[in-house]
Length: 350
Image (cartoon, rainbow, N blue to C red; front, side):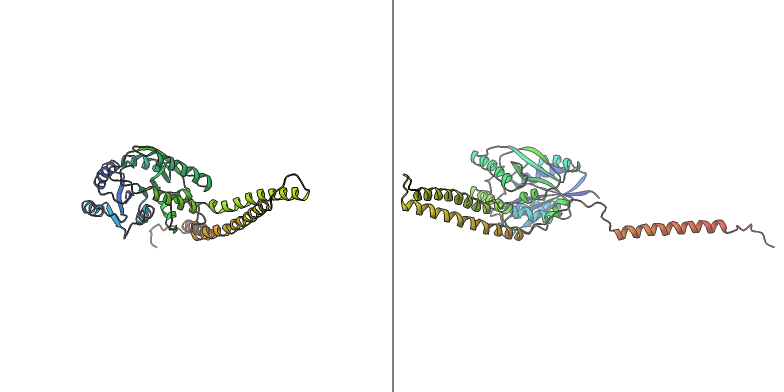
């Protein structure tokens, strides 16, 4: 039987793009007849006619499965729901419905997967009609995440990716609610390659992610993958304590030796307060380390992920197989000896 590739598409206010997306998907997948194809559309509480259009498309094609979420949960949850639905697929491709992710790139993703890649990610080298603020914000976000999270997040990567079934299986146990979908996939590792593409402008409508939603997503991903914001308080406390302590020692030394540098009592009090404020920040930073440990436990990510098991039979099974082979060999040897020792009958009678 041919392998199955499922294409997961989150949908939110994309009524004007769905027909065009379906037509282009059909044209592309028809050229790759070595696989079976399915399309999983996840309607993320769209207020427009997206659900009705998806229902019409599902009536025309058996390839289509529609998941209608009870409300708008956000793109990250919609992607998760679609990937969970594709449990029988040998590979899963995630893409947006606005046609900024060109379906014509799918054959390239499949080719890289056939070569052995387990994650085939796309990198957007340019986008038609993208604002300067959004472009700068995207570069700044990836730079910050790469430097404080420890993740290997390549700048301008998108959700347009192919995942092998191994990756999907490893992703299923992840339970955190405030999630960055591709951030979790990057955290899991696996063999990956990158494919560059030029993103077209949206086919119709407006972007579902406003600047406020993008800001919230950035904050959630930073706090989810890094304890650096918690540690920052402690670092500030250490710096303030050291500087104010040195300044206080200098001021008190000058006061005691009767130096010509006179400091008012108010100035000394201000420095003392600053010194104690630094100590308080250090204490908060210490508490933050314990809070960070609780956070790490609560998000409940797997301790490790096994990409592949090789020679995984138990010792008992191996020994049992060896003994069985020895027994069979011994029985065959005895059978051959019996055959040689038994006289053949010449068929004559006395």
